[in-house]
Image 1 (cartoon, helix red, strand yellow):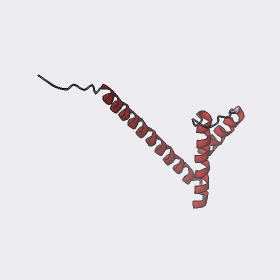
Image 2: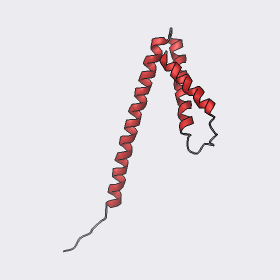
Image 3: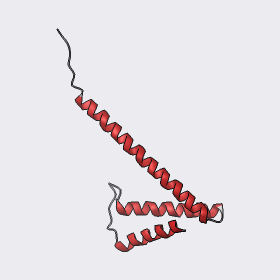
Image 4: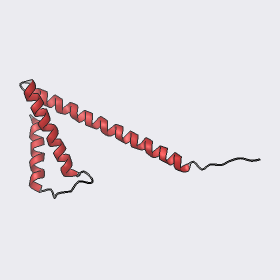
Length: 100
């Protein structure tokens, strides 16, 4: 009997890792869309016009992005020390913006 045996362990592990990564990315994208939907709903309730809605929504999304950067800086960028006051200021801004 003659034959060829190939070890496909690494390929299978790579496929499993890719599936895990794809699932995690899908979950995170769904979370982001849920956040965007909630921000849009909150903003539309308090804004008087389309222009106000656009301005408020943009401000809230930018504040959320700044808060994310404070919690976990982008790899490869020069990291600056985060002052407690800046963190509190952004968190306060987010809380009061969402409460409106």
